[in-house]
Amino acid sequence: MSLVAMRDLLEHAYRHNYAVGAFDLCGLEFLDGVIAAAERCRAPVILNLDQPRCGASDFDRLLPAAEAAARQAVVPVAIHLDRGADIEAAVHAVNRGCNGVMVDASDRELGDNIRITREVVSMAQGCGVAVEGKLGGVDGVDGAGEVVYTGVAEARAYVERTGVDFLAVSIGADTGRSRSRPRLNWQRLKQINETLRIPLVIHGGDGISDDQFRRLIANGVAKIHHPTVLVDAAGERLRAGARKGAGADYRAVMREVRKGVEQEAECYMRLWGGAGRAAEVLEQCRGWEPVEHAVFHGRDGLGEEEVAVVIEEGRRAFSAIPGVRAVRTGEVVQTDRRFGWLLSVCHPAVIGAYREHPSYVAFARTRAERLSSLPSVADDAAPHRPRPAARAQEAASVAWSRGR
Image (cartoon, rainbow, N blue to C red; front, side, top):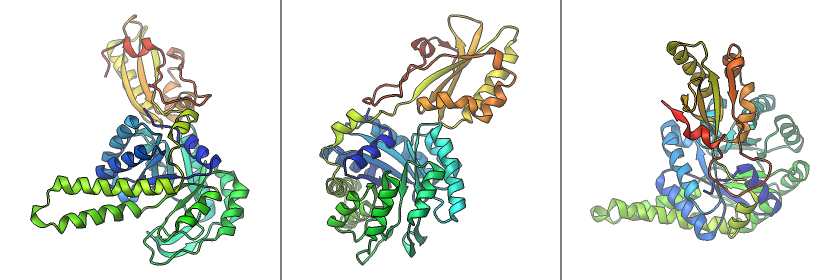
């Protein structure tokens, strides 16, 4: 049970001068290889789902597998949506297991970037989810274009007006494949770090030397997304398997791909300083587990058809709220006077925020006098080791009949 809050994870890395690798998942071989590498060197890791590269169908297939692998891991793991298209993509990712999101509006004017990012932050705060912002980058696709550097003044304004937890900055690193060593603007990075004092993120890594990576980390970079490194390692193993001809066994080739991913990921985890940090991260960072919350409605004076209508209205209302991962309905066993909804939410913050959501407000407008809920026992105030899902009360999870 080693899913941890991404905000805590990167703040720990920032305070202790190391960087967590965010590794793209291009398939199950990548997922298995990255987790194996992290467990081998006892390092925290971020499973990165790059929306443009994944595509919608692969994203929805990979995310449940990533969440399952993270929960089974013995090292701290966070799951991140990278380069989400819009607020809807961020909500979709949160509802399916991501505890970090980034909607990339860096190609927009600063005002539009701030507006879009602020909307994402507002949603994510109500779900306890961390948000990465982005300023600058490459004026093109996957590294093809001119570098647009992040300015110090605009970075300060952006962070103050959006409230992002981390900022991806552009100082000359190339997000695509580069044949030459990038010219990194160290003075700009130093100024941004001294001004913001929040974890910084670098997207790109081709051509960056080991010493340069260490210098990036010394200047506030706590998360590194190197998008080509594992893809290249996997491709090399695939080509080696193909050269064996018709006698190459598919499963054997895929094991080699996994091994290549594992070896390359481990190399960078050690280089970036995360190796051996797992125990202290698990001790100091909050776990990330769903919480169950029960909402009830009195049934006095309602016939069966009316009850069915209210149940469906409530299901639609709760399902529209960001952070509500599942909605079960039914009746309370101990009494025939109440029915309701059992919500599985991604974080205790949702319990404090859902009553402000327009969907719930519209539903409760005519139902408020008959609605009630049980308090959650989840405690979000202090760091803790990952633990099983907190429940509203044990009775709320077991005293449920005719549930759907």
